[in-house]
Image (cartoon, rainbow, N blue to C red; front, top):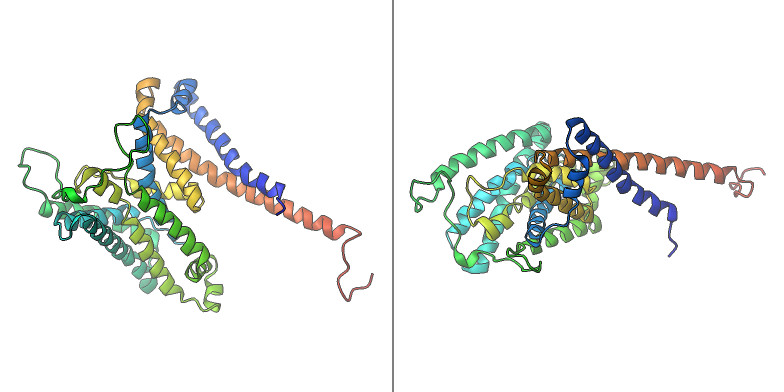
Length: 371
């Protein structure tokens, strides 16, 4: 197999250029703010402790699921901004159902996962239905559904809250899931007192299915075709409205899984302390990973790494932890810009190559043309 050196070089140029641009812009921001540039970067690049490594991996598991949910919509040119609301609804429903202990042990976990996927899919399906039947932009509808989901879950939480702890706590949460359904995790990092979420396996499985279904099946081809050209998709027999609704439901179903590692591996209930912001982070990570399952995994690890290092920034370098949000945003913008620049460069190089080949005296003469 012959390797295309230019193609490989262009593939490597984009991420390298993005990192350089992100480093330069962030350093300029630090200089303007009067923060110590060298100390900030030395803190961020310092080798994390084993416990922090586990936290990074756990954060990446959740972020990965969120980004895959967003990427499913992106592959069809649908902007599912509602992952935040979808995973909240799903996590609450799964927590309430799993807490009942209808099934023993592992079967109860599967019931919780199925409940989450159904709840997330149905909630996303509302936006899909509005787009197909009423022409409402999924961006607007999913943003509004986020607000509705947040308020709805807060109200439902007051009805389903666990009253066994008494009234002395300010934290409101559902009843805890049974001990037999709580996952202990994997001791993957030597020297760490905490463990990696067991549902890391779920994230890997979702990534593999995402790659296979969207890249290797007729359904995936139809989905991508409908996203690239609706006219061409209709001409090839794809029912675009049905595909839009199916894609939104599928994206919401995966979004429903976002909170499951937290529910079964850490919190064991849903409450006011359940981690927020996971859906919005997924948008940035999907862009960072270019909707590629491996790229999204790298992006999720980077995002989680920066999150965990934000505490060290405040303590060691004396800067605000919000600086990490700036770095994350700059990296996403740098990646988008870098890949677009490299794409344009690639097109120009290809055009130049074709022009040279056509102008070459040894170029073959088209059949029927005079020499």
